[in-house]
Amino acid sequence: MFSFLFATAMALVVDKFRIHSATSFSLAPLATILPPAILIFLLGIYDDRRDASPLLKFSVQAIAGAMLFAGGLRIFALPVLFGTHRFSSVTGLVLTIVWVIAITNAFNLIDGLDGLAAGSALFSTLVVFVVALLGNMSLISLVALALAGAIVGFLRYNFNPATIFLGDCGSLFIGFMLSALALYGSQKTPTIVAVAIPMVSFGLPILETSLSVMRRLISGRPVFTADREHIHHKLLQRGMSHRQVVIVLYGVSAMFALLSLFLLWPTGSTLGLVLAVLGTGIWIGVQHLGYLEFGELRRVAQRTVTQRQVFVNNLAIRRAAEELKTSADFDDIGRILGAAFEENDFDGFELRAESHSGGELAVGQGAAYPPLRWRKPGSHIVPGFRNTWSLHLELVSTGNHYCGTLIVFRRYVNPDLQTDISLLTSVFAANLADALHRVIRSKQDIPIASEVSAFLQARAG
Image 1 (cartoon, rainbow, N blue to C red):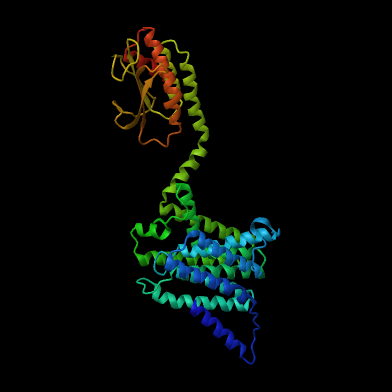
Image 2: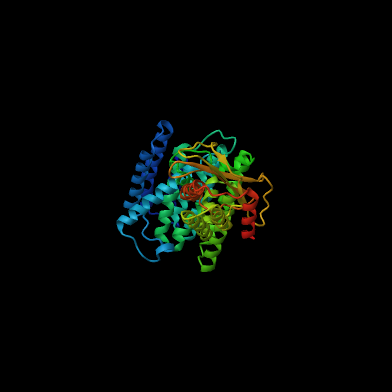
């Protein structure tokens, strides 16, 4: 921070005493940006020394954002989403504070490896410098160049193996300065460029922050808890060295910076191409990082796509549960079960009925009948179902009588199950137990296993 302030001050002094100065700086932007920037720097020092709470950090950052808003640096429109619509003062204040907090903490969040945050910030700062230079914003181009020079000098000793470190005071200060410079640029270029270029050029820290928040929300963990699942941690887990990870992420930051510069000429085709490249790159990168949370999210999305099949399978179970209420004999039970399992994702089942002499019966007591077995036509289940997983349902009637066991089988190699297991374990199992209880109490003859199997296989065929 001090090297940045010194370089900026020296440049202003030299310019002031030049006889034929080609520039005429207005120091108003500096008067707006520097006081809250110093406040953020002091917050970082306190956090490094005393470990500030999230509430304190966000409160001070919100105050700094409000100071920028009061000085005229504010978000008054989002052309990408709302066209030419201008926000009210309250909405603009909220959006400005959110922007400052998000970018400030984004650069703090990626400061997990030597040289990573500083290097990523360098690419973003150079983009700000180029945009300011092309937009004839002389003072902002000077400030951006001074910040870039301070980062380069620091990075010389911060790259692995590092001898100095950013700390929170450094990463928060850099993040805040970049958020403020982007806000100033948006006042001078109230077009799509004002929003799109900062968002893309700050791509790596924004992506890291977004992934971290989404991961923790999906997994039900507090958003502010620390973990070792950041992008750089994932790359380290894949066997890359510290330096290799940093260099790879430098390349990612450089790519974000380059793509953002294409938006200086925001034609429809250019914007579409940049968004397509970004979206594809981010999607492929996140897939290769192997986050468990997004794997689960993908599974839920696939389940949504196949929801119609889930409805079909679940309705088959519900229909069988209703029909079991009026089943008259064991053959009827076999017919109902065969029809139900033909229409779902299970490959087979085995029904083991047990008789009793009355009253409550514990598992294993009473006379066991030959099991009823069924296998879906075309299924490659081997005898004994050894290449499958199974679900055992102990069948207890509503009168608390044990009536046997239903075992359902499914091959390991099959795709995701498209049936809700809770349907089998609740009403279906209870109704099946009641049906068996009625048949056994009526003392009807239960067919031998081979006859029942033949009946079901013939029906399935």
